[in-house]
Length: 483
Ligand SMILES: [Zn+2]
Image 1 (tube, protein in one colour):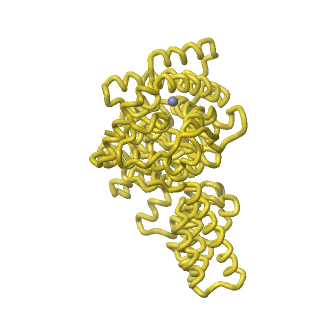
Image 2 (cartoon, rainbow, N blue to C red):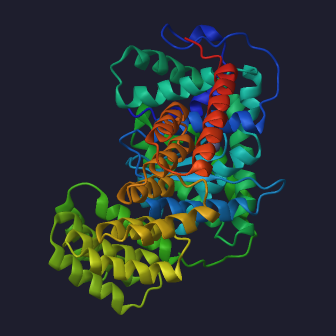
Image 3 (cartoon, rainbow, N blue to C red):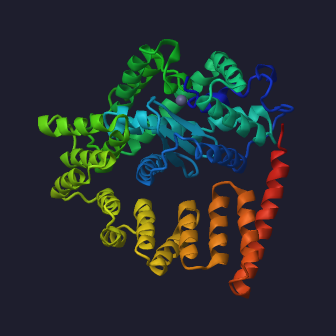
């Protein structure tokens, strides 16, 4: 049973009285009234993200995630009220699901991205999720649970995520019990579902997508769900798709002007990349080859060749991958995804200088593109240009100081340069950003012991260490770690 989709359900069930929680789950403490501050929501979300990033389903593909973030934050920009930043990420999971965690984190299953037949369809599900967050549905539910329970809520979410990959542990039974109790919450959640649909439709419309995408995707998901019986796919469990809901959406969009919205190139390339990474690699090759041969693809032809190239690369057939890439180039597509694939192919054929050249050019045009920055630093290290790698990392951190991956890559460049104090300092930043404060503190203590670096660098390390230690103390107090 796939329990990950229960992350949102969990928040629905969390307001249930304590007795539904079986032994082995954290003590929820007293339930009292209080406000869940945005900072607290964020902390819960970060705690959960810390676990999700270690899950085998974590895709961690900077191009897929960058796309989802552009799409999601583009929709959110049209929300009413104060702007909120969202962090979207993909999980490799064939079920149709998306879920919002506290603090603006939104997970999207690759199955959902592949099932969407248009970008408007994918956008409609994201708009629905974003609306749960902007309407404070979760905060309203968590408020009922009382204040100061961050650790409990976070560990409960984590327990559910853990049970997903290991259903046999005792936790599984408790979680299944909770899932059964969701039924009790349906009245409550139905209002929220209707509101998320209504607000989400507004976002879709103002962002210029085809609002009919919501009706068509929901309808298709409902039919898909019928095949599953009790074991309905995640999205349908966490956001029950009733005929009434679909009819409501249908009524709302009646009379709105018909609009043909073409899918973005990036949507098509991201889907091709995901499809190339799914299942048996021979099937993936055949899938794209057949589409090209029979000309059955609906969107841009370049995306199909790109998918074929990715599939061949995965199959280890570099010559065929290069050939398919040459086909992509014929269409003069202006996407950094083409350059990163070309560079990856070069690297896989032990041509780091070739990869570096491609990435330097891509970087000069797209200095903010995460995948390009990461790949360029790696390639520069491979051709033993640590000074230039360091410059790319340091320049990037000026505007992207919360990018843990760049901090980790900067640590690698310092290691290559033999600057050990700076190496541990940069690694500490990477750990802290991923919610691993204790590991960050350890790195700073190692930095203190290296004995290299000047007075200024050493006092910087000392100051940062004190900050992290204070933050850890504060967190411990706030979390009141139960168990
Ligand atoms: Zn929903």
